Length: 296
Image (tube, rainbow, N blue to C red):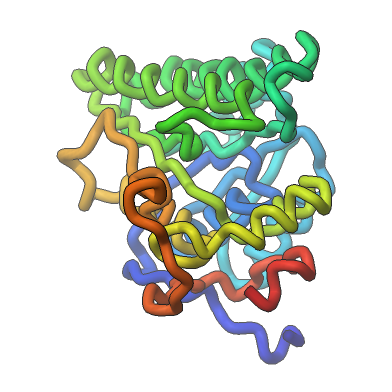
């Protein structure tokens, strides 16, 4: 799509929903985080993108500004307590405060549990659990404890175990429990904190997995009760809802965006391939996905 043909983000929400709000999105340069950043900016927020690598952040911020939104970026190693705290204070010094936080940054690799090395285990736990905690605590201490606000943590469909992903399953489950705890402890400060748990989402993140994992995912996606993969937009719209005033009486919860995958009981009721549950895809700049997913 050329620049002259470029559409705007098609959100289902009003375009001034987050006007005047500063929202920090970790992992905001790629994949689901990039889509979330685009939608929040399209709804009026100034989105601050943070991740380890500057180049994807710069590209996404430039896209948002080209679309008429407001965005800035800075590098942040969410596993480094000192770096997190310094960067959160830098954001507040520049923008006055942080009104909301989306903890999207994370990472994992596919492996049978028996082959996961201690270094790999620690890396995934440190990123998905400790990193989420460090950013959450810092944003609360420096901003939200005084003014209130909302936090959304991106987790995963780990409800019935997570074969081939024991490390991230453990970390994401811990984040869900942490979210429940903080929703109680921080309620009196006017802070709401919830999770969004995506199922298998068709995004550029699929490129991070080996071809055999991509093929397996493409081959079995119809077994989801929705008979398809999810879109980045379907995750993003759930995040926007939980950040919005419409969710003012919702805290400590996890919204599953998985097409019913976490409820599937295939051993009792076999699934079948269909096209009845249509996808929502409002992201006008959705990134390319692996070829194997284009015809399913």
